[in-house]
Image (cartoon, rainbow, N blue to C red; front, side, top):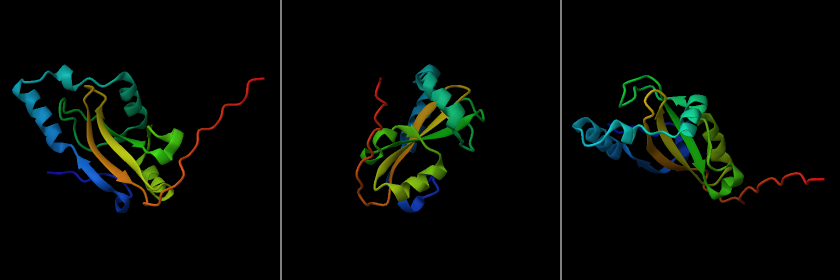
Length: 144
C-alpha cells in the first residue's frame, strides 16, 4: 500500500520518488535471514539526536522492533536555499518555504530511536516554480 508524501503543501509536490519497494525488500531480507539487524539498524548518533529533538511522529510502529519510537525527519536541499540547505524542517515550515522558493528537494527519513532503524522513504520537489536568486551566506563579523 503506497503512502502519499506527508506535507501540508501537496499542491507544490512534484517529482515524487517513493522508496517503499526497496524498503520492503530490505525488511524481507532481514526476516529471511539474508541481512543482519546491525546492517539495517545503524543510524548515526547525530541522526538519532536529530530524530529525538526534531522528529515528527510517524504514527506507525517501527518495522524492525515494532516500537512506537518511529519518527520522520524532512531534510531540505536546493541551490536557492543557500546556507540553509541540508537543514531539518517541520511539515508546517515546508508550506511556507514552497511559497518563498522556486524549487527545493525534500528528503523524508524515518528513524527509530529504540533500535536505530533508519531509511530514506520519500523524496520530492517543492516550490512555486519561479526561479529566485540563491540566498547568500552571512559574513562573519570582522575580528578586531
